Length: 148
Image (cartoon, rainbow, N blue to C red; front, side, top):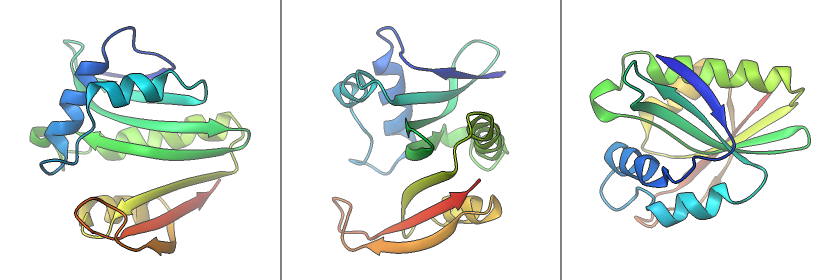
């Protein structure tokens, strides 16, 4: 198992889409084209947790502009959730951002994603606001941030 930080995925966008679709409620996962488009942007990166067979266990897609990072999406394979993989991935990500002298990390999370909200609170993220009916299912998004 290892966590790698990547700026491109060399044609493996389908792997990330498959993992994302599996981890999110039906209709909320991003397709292969979304990953291809996002990763063509120079300030988008991935932090990926691979198992011993180089399969994706979880990943975090983020943007990094100057001293500010934004988590765009974060997921762990459903069968591996609640086993510390997400917590470890987030901890490693936060350490990497400190090394890069990032001062603030932003994210939004569905108001009913209680396990993610609990994880973010555990790592010092605070709620800063709400986007009403932000998601396609009309769910609100909680805006969260963490100063480093």
